Image 1: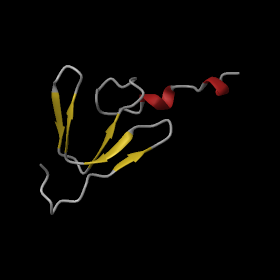
Image 2 (image 1 turned 180 degrees about the vertical axis):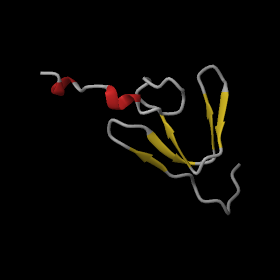
Image 3 (image 1 turned 45 degrees about the vertical axis):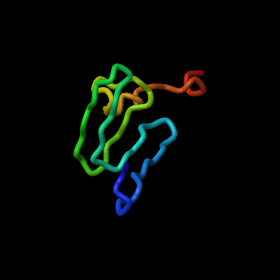
Image 4 (image 1 turned 30 degrees about the vertical axis):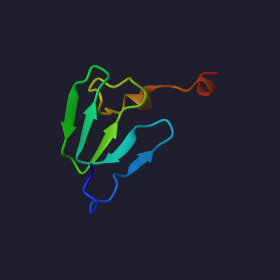
Length: 70
């Protein structure tokens, strides 16, 4: 149970980008592995193109949208 004096974590959603989460955070993967970051803000990958899961490495920037390829 969270401490009632703490405010909730803020998560910012960006179109075609990562989730920006106010840290520190613990991310639990599908396999149960826990990854920790103590940074002020962390970027969680949502496109699954990152080489450093679960953290975003900006690989989504190299992706071209379908409407841009024509």
